Amino acid sequence: MANQVLAHSLFSEEDINLFKEGRHYRLYKHFGSHPITLDGVKGTYFAVYAPAASRVEVIGDFNGWNGFDHVLNVRWDSSGIWEGFIPNIGPGHLYKYRILNPDYDHDFEKADPYARAAEHPPKTASVVSASGHLWSDDTWLKERGAKNSLEAPMSVYEVHLASWQRKENGDPQGYWELADTLVPYVKEAGFSHVEFMPIMEYPYEPSWGYQITGYYAASSRFGNPDGLKYLIEAFHKEGIGVILDWVPSHFPSDEHGLGNFDGSAVYEHPDRRKGYHPDWKSLVFNYGRPEVKSFLISNALYWLDEFHVDGLRVDAVASMLYLDYSRNYGEWEPNEFGGNENLEAIQFLKEFNEAVYAHYPDVQTIAEESTNFTGVSKPTFEGGLGFGLKWMMGWMNDNLSYFERDTIYRKYHQNEITFSLAYGFSENYMLPLSHDEVVYGKKSLLEKMPGDDWQMFANLRLLYSWMYLHPGAKLIFMGGEFAQRAEWDFSGSLVWDEKQYESHNGVFKCLQSLNKLYRNEASLHELNYSEQGFEWIEHNDSDNSVLSFIRKSEKEELVCVLNFTPDPKTDYRIGINNPGKYELVFNGDASNYWGSNYKVKSRLESEKKASHGRKQGLKLNLAPLAALVYKKKS
Image (cartoon, rainbow, N blue to C red; front, side):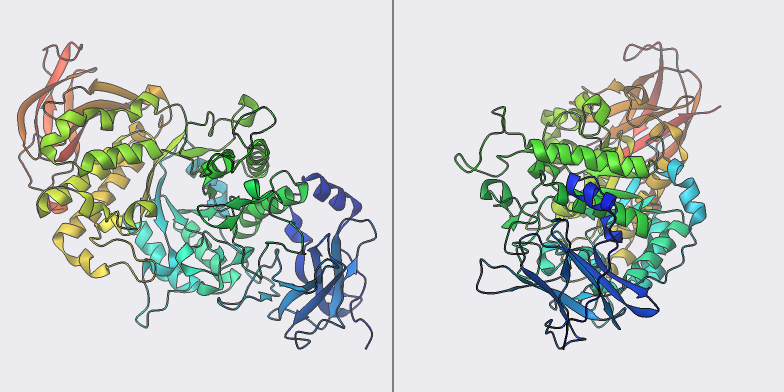
């Protein structure tokens, strides 16, 4: 039978030029599989980039996985694009590309890099897909700029969808089910945003989604792409933003994936010193190749365009920035200026951020970046990388180190919890207590805390209190909100039975109150990334292990005092800026949090007694292992 592929193209000459220049940011509208009607005939248009191929066939369940009659046409313009229309194929059909390269004695069967759906792993075929979802989140999209602003409170609940709450049969909940369970839970807890660990299709469960093969396909583990849109819309209707983990740093070498796609290094860097990641045994994108830049930036905009997501948290940015990242001497080559910076990756990240904010100024990009690279969250026109926010890994490491210490030794390590304010406004920081801190023998956050059971829970409440009173956005991994005792198990479920106990539920209630305080008090978010929003009262009282400081907005102030020991303190004096009457607006030792309910003063009046370089002061009692927050009455 003759070839049944009809000549057809969704590419204009301008599209091809932009693609080859690395400046086409909507490639998903052209590449992949697209159900269309051509001359009154329903079918599917296919297009794939395979510049080293001598022949590309579409194989699938519609031709017995034999593509002899379905050979794509190579474009005349030497672009390396193969395309064509196949009648009588539509949504739901399975397919792959069979790619022949004259330099090999075997062919390559590859999933579609631009497929919008994929088979449930371990199966690996792509699925022809068409969306029927009709969005109804206009109200959220109109308000999103204010909700995502750096002047707004951002508290993020990080979720691994598969292990958040499994069904009785052990299967993960699907997108539609999560809309009925996860959405109201996040709303009840008071978080402003939710962050999904990668939900793009991935083959290997223990990678938690960070080894992606289907960058454009919402994982079939939880349903179809419209299910994910429904879930995101459900969050938006409750006023909650959705952030996706995005992984442009590396990809796995699975046979059906992007690696050696057409017998050549289409997506990975051909030099193994730049194209292979030793930590994850995965391949690294060739950021200097224009077609790869177009692929990745188009992918970022795809999730913003088609799924209305409100932010992208970019994984492992540090591994992209440095040529010698996790590499020994001789395993990397300096750049043209003799340095260790990956200049092509840096330029890619700048172009990515410029493209995202040019099209969506009301979203945020967030960098997981752990080095002292300058200007990660500064605009590109100021020489920065252009991210909106950067994870504050130093805060996380120093504070967990401090909190793990027995309280009697904390006075010798006061600098561990104060050091973050020495550089705290050099970037727009997000404070992360992420999944990485509760796996691989690191213990859960609760089990990191010292002391008896009461002190462990009190310490965790104090850690959260310090986090919410400290400048910056916040992120907490699921299970931490109710002090799960066990480490996170990606193959299981959170231990929901624990939440019924007063001690665990007390942590949840405390976090609810902190989210409410953070949301309602402008002093905690209006100047979150500015030195004008924070002022120390006393950070050197190491003998008592006490911190006191002021958080500010344009019009108001909050006075915050934290006692990092289990010993209550009476008649503790601090200096203040503004005389008057003060009311207690948060007490981390309250009985409904499973605190000791130590008697502290709910109302204070300033005294004309100098303290801490100020003419006025307050005298208060400090509860054990707790934060107190006071606000001046109008």
